[in-house]
Length: 123
Length: 123
DNA sequence: CTAAATGCAAACTATTTGCAACGAT
DNA sequence: ATCGTTGCAAATAGTTTGCATTTAG
Image (cartoon, rainbow over all chains, first blue to last red; front, side):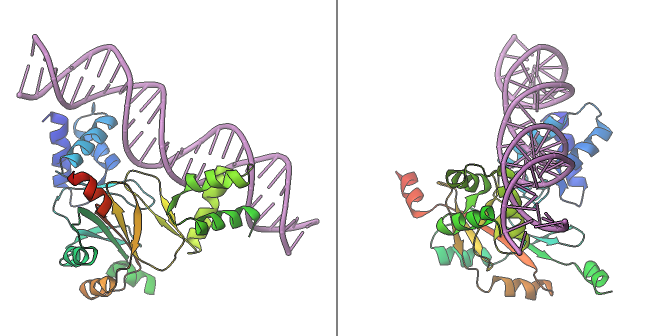
């Protein structure tokens, strides 16, 4: 556990958002100007492999990282790009029944318009 | 509808697989050696925007393209990388009930081991 | 002390784009 | 003739990697 890795983890924990690697890098630079972009990417990959964090692949944009490790879906607002977690209770069980074997992992992203963006669009 | 676009569409229809842009490009070159990679990417993007085909973003690999336009989920085998369609009946309705608003689109990929890969791994 | 992690820069993969030439209507 | 489309090559975005140096245990 190096200073760099600790910093990356702390920044992720402090942010309520799902940050991109470059957002984490930028914030990290503020506190540790010598940190390299490669170090951030390397640590994110290592922590992903250790299942300490999860990588979210975003259509048409950089990956984002999620500090929670318990599996869940994501709710993506097509208006403002904000991303929220959603519990997907029952879904996995249902699918396991349907395919007759274990689900190893899954990725679910629901695109919608959040209340605020819906309001703006209505005007 | 140019010769190039028609060729790209035909190749997608002929293949039972979900091809990557480069796989399509390679196949297209066999029949039309002058076709450019950029043309394939451009046409795939145009057809995606026209909702004639769908783009599937694959974790850690190039996007794949799906000739069917009706929404459905995907079943990805972590062993051999093969990809199948799965109907996801009811899921969207359930989620709309939960979030109280319309789902504009979604992306669901289930990772599992197909029967063949499961057998190989058991040995 | 030594194995692992870092900083840096260059490499890489997938994709997009500017532009002059081409082709369909 | 005109306007969209192509082929080409260069550019871009995001990420990874090789290597000499530094650091944690």
